[in-house]
Length: 174
Image (tube, rainbow, N blue to C red):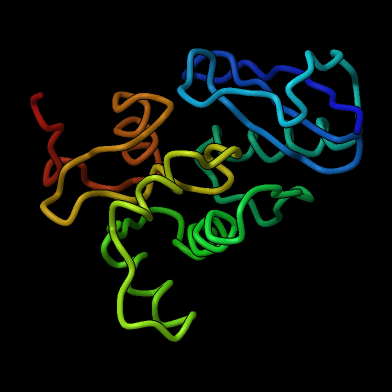
């Protein structure tokens, strides 16, 4: 499958957009952990309607407004990760939830007694579509800002941008 990329300049640095030509397959900050191309091949820079649509979404977001649409997304990974990412899409703009809450929600949906918060954290950390799939809205149960592949400073910035009071959160010291 052909893979294409283009870039977007955000207040937080360069964001690379990935696509199969029709749907968004990736949205990564420059220097982000787990930044890889779905096919493993070096994709071509290309101008595509999906990139224009994603730019429009990002423009609205970085103007401090809530986008009212989501560009077409293709998630290609394990069923567990995809299910977690779909749960992330339900977190409202300007709100947060915890890894534990996502784990409990996943367990309820799948009719099991429990799910590991660490397993959920691993899936959240591998989210290929930053910001649009809002993994930055997931925090530790104790209020810690952890686990953001784009960097904890970006996570704090995004939460503040969405009007979330980040004074109650902290970045754990290693």
